Length: 102
Image (tube, rainbow, N blue to C red; front, side, top):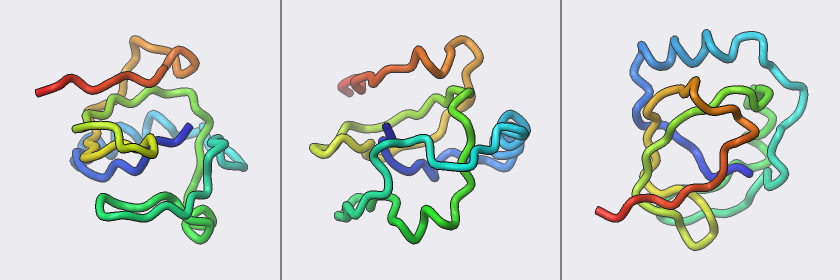
């Protein structure tokens, strides 16, 4: 399930690391059942059908750690930031986690 877009946190070094890690994992179709989305709001919007045509999809084999402030009512991440790739978890073992209260 797609939980939102993550733009913050992608330094040039981390971006290069991610691209190297996903090289060869290109997929022919979107792996998410809940896309496209027409949601919109103050904190961002979902991935639209038009955007779907521009994106490159990869097979869900790598795990990324993402920090975030909270879950929205519709199940998206608020204030998401990329932290890094994880090698200690398999993609199939990832489950939704609640954020820690500050």
